[in-house]
Length: 198
Image (cartoon, rainbow, N blue to C red; front, side, top):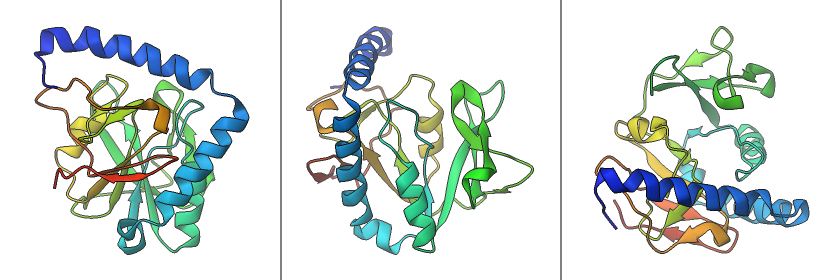
């Protein structure tokens, strides 16, 4: 559902509020179960098995938990890279982390890599990138947080992309603009879906 940029902001803002409320109202037990199902499905992906590097956000309370995935990736001998926002821009750099001690609280209350301790990523030609989103649709378009960091990054990322999302936050169609980037696959607590965007 492509709409013009003048209308899209208000529509997305309303959707964001709705999905944030839905996620915040989930019981801890339900969230833990859904996180576990998503993590298990993600770790069975062929794309995960063959990748050397997992690019991922470090999850906040209302997001699908990525901490177990990060630990599993280390256990599986993979490299893990997480983003750090560049001050006064809408850009971010990724850094390899080797333990949770490599993280500190950064922009928007998100855990980010400590620059002085971590190696900056320079090759984005391959790997598997977990993309955050409050909602995804059947074509792989996502409802992010409205800052544009990931859409800018994905425009130059050469690997495969996956969205992790609770099944009750999936919509058939989301509004999207010309700069929005669809992910290659979606993993929920109930299924894995290829979006056919590649």
